[in-house]
Image (cartoon, rainbow over all chains, first blue to last red):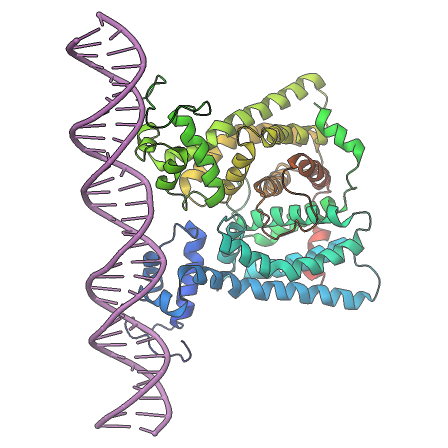
Length: 236
Length: 236
DNA sequence: ATACGATTCAAACGAGCGTTTGAATCGACC
DNA sequence: GGTCGATTCAAACGCTCGTTTGAATCGTAT
């Protein structure tokens, strides 16, 4: 269907004009971030990208496939880097357990690197990803499950060794909580206008540095026991 | 525009047939949960509710207003109950500080009560709410900000007294993380298919009982300092 | 030069959308 | 029993959507 880098004749040949597929992906990343998947039309998308309306269906086949391409372009390398970082930690540590902090940092650092690259919209992508987590569309849910399965399983095993006081089930829930806080934070929707005195969101690094101690403490917390159950129910 | 409970003549007068406005709200709650706001059409919504297509615009004015009505019907009472619970805690404690656990429980318990009421879709609503947190539509964001402002500010002051080692800015971020984990968990999107060995989602109570110790530990964690900053950046 | 596959383009397709309209129908009241 | 406001109803409005089509145009190899 597509191979060489030809075509593109209508628009002025800027120095900042990559091929059509990339222009579509860049515009889609930006607009999906601003308005979400359903609320972004292919007409405004192709207009923003400076390409013809039919280009999306020619190069990607459908709007759904385009959205998956937007996600996989950055998500797959990020998760591969996460797995590689964890592998390096494990190799350096021999058969000794790794600390909880270092495992979590290995998860956060690739996301931080993505948030840093200003030239190509890493921050835009993280917002799109944060919203995709909460999107009910089945094709999005299945896609994310497949993309995350390997990375999550590798990290779950590592955390299990680092947090021996947690059962596998307990850890599953805590990783769920970690992913929730992380995606909500990276998406940065400012839902509750909490940024009254906080600097603008251009400082993802400081944000993750605040998130890390919070998550580490939560992961290290004692496991649930029956005494605590009664506290919650009848505590008030 | 609307006042008495008259009308309704087309459908059989079941015992389970409240007035048109309520039937619309119930169907909307369910469908907004399943497909999201944008992907739910008024045609499928009114068909599911067993009412005429024009009823939504007659009773609510527009689809936007209907969505806000779906949210406010349950969110406003829940946040009022949260404020009342915190007020009761503060009255009982006199001028002594309240523990972090009790403040957090006062936030969680109204949500838990909503998740429990099976007859009228409390769980459905919590999923809708979790997704609304991540929705980019401006009218949703403004609505949620207004609905949450009072509750969040009251709790922030309470947490500030319970956690004196945290600056106001640090606490703002931590409450952001708490809301992230909470909304993600309540929305229960199972994004990462983590429920491999976990019981089905009908047990919100056990879920919140696992979430509480995680969040308490995160809130109580030491504040960020410069030593930790260096760890994160050059730690790997 | 010519032929060819890849790509771009303007235009249209059918479907579905939120909303509006105006008549029909209801319960309530004089 | 007739009037009135509230509600329901079927039908249509204008519009936008994702997708398809077929011709025009490109770079490239013959």
